Length: 503
Image 1 (cartoon, helix red, strand yellow):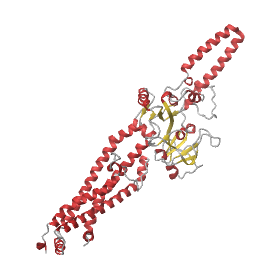
Image 2: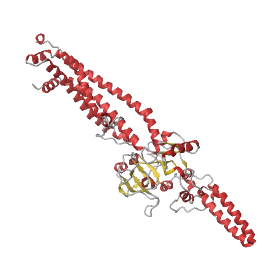
Image 3: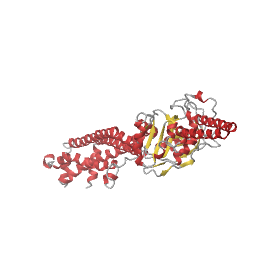
Image 4: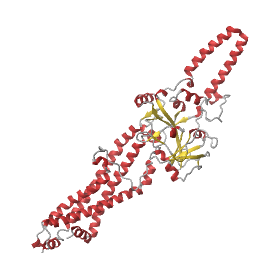
């Protein structure tokens, strides 16, 4: 006597009721799978994306979370801009000097120095030795005074604490993707990954450079997702739209010279252009308030740093401190001033999930579990209500030699079949639902989720079974346990069936 075959035929005989019962179970499982997978994958991706080789983000005063979402995940709009001179405070003396050489202030001071030297030479020639010595003493004293006030004569205020700093300029779009103006150091020097030990690599091409003979300032690197969805190849030209996806398209075109390998980070969805080219696009240069004060001062705008320093601003900067122990004190120092704010991306994302995302996920899980329990009760009611109709069937089985335990086991198998079918159907439907909503999820979060994406292991000790297995896989034994519980009462009813009365 094949008990499984008997139970299956019994379920099949009442196919409509059985199907509706299994579908109700599948609905609950679908919701559980979708909630666990989407919340788990999104949380893991956000946590991973905050390990991008830097520990701080510095930007304009405003919302700390908005700054993180904008500069790390490219999801929010920029708050405001900060002066380019503030970015230079994180650089050593040599880099500051190179940057300031392309400024009106530097050129004005240089021209005054030249004029002063001419005056000194003339005075020395006409006034004799004593006059020459006096002028030299005054000149040295003036130089000492200037070194204290001229910014290119000193180290940056925060350079001693800075290991790496990378400026970002945001605000433009290419299709639905963010355009980020930055320096080649983003891919040459910055590393990513949980241990910040992975180097960016290119599926095709190479990183952009500050200035090339072939493309000038106008080179771009695109993430793997951008290249795939926008059908970009090496040599493709990109014309960003200003300020919004539907904004005015810039006349300036950037040539794609590199396509990144997939990294699983927000950079997969970024269009990275040379910051020098970004500044030279229409409406990207900051007007100089006292530009009339610099009339007659000439700056070589054909040099590799074409736009003058006074016309520059940045949205934010990615900062890696020279030693992690410097980070808290540096954050306090920056935040106490009025120019900018510093945030820890990992901290902000943790607050977001702990305060909003995790409670919402837990509430959804409670609701979906209740749906599963209601489905289990429906299995119990469905089978139990058929017991009065099946008394004769059970009595015949008993008369043919089936024991009470055998009949009870058949009813338990029926409950298991209904639960297992509903669980498997719900598992498939859950991942199907995720696939259908993957485009919307990717558009909102920048995270791609496919049919075969599973919820990450629970946040427990990874050495334990519960800590190393996806919670989705725990649904299967959970369904088995639920089916056993749901089938107990009908099975007991079948166990107590009186053969003599039923026949």
